Image (tube, rainbow, N blue to C red):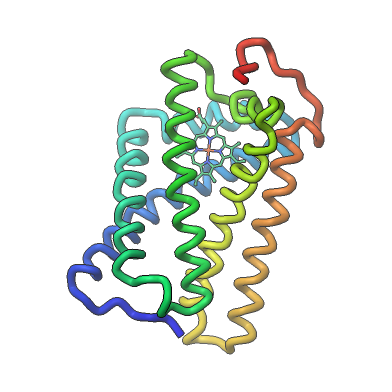
Length: 211
Ligand code: HEM
């Protein structure tokens, strides 16, 4: 089912990709946990972010995170180019497609956060994330943000499927992967409702009305 990588160069690239991926996964887990607090209240999201920033917004944390992204995106694209698209199984296609979307999203998202921080001199908190969803650009940002959460869970689901398949039945592996992907869809909808002010209403101050 899985097409193994055997070329020594590609194996080294895969190890680098996995290592950067694990570093990034630690940040993403913290970031998504942060966003889950928005389901409770905007204040809790902002307060948790103050704490989380102690971990990723110091020179070491920020350097590690940006280094992981700079390794993860090009190594992922190189792996896709070497593996190809045609000869791979459906589950690997899910992994590749979600990985490519995450590459695009990470670059665009980090660029936006840096612009917010250094160009607009804003505190890039909950309101900064919510701002485009409450603007005329909502039709772009709903799928843009929504797919980012779904892509993470789809990426994890496809890796999980390939890892557990040798140790369990095909049906059990499929059910587990589907459960992970469904969780992603549910979370994506809930987070969009929170950031759009539908779950808990909030008003944007003038400085966050960017569009
Ligand atoms: C609903 C979806 C999302 C929203 C609304 C959102 C919002 C935000 C906000 C407001 C920040 C600024 C954080 C700060 O100033 O401390 C941020 C930073 C960041 N986000 Fe997201 N995010 C979302 C999803 C994601 C996903 C899925 C990923 C990973 C694939 C991600 C990766 C990052 C990264 C790498 C940073 C930069 C951290 C830094 O260097 O300070 N985000 N995001």
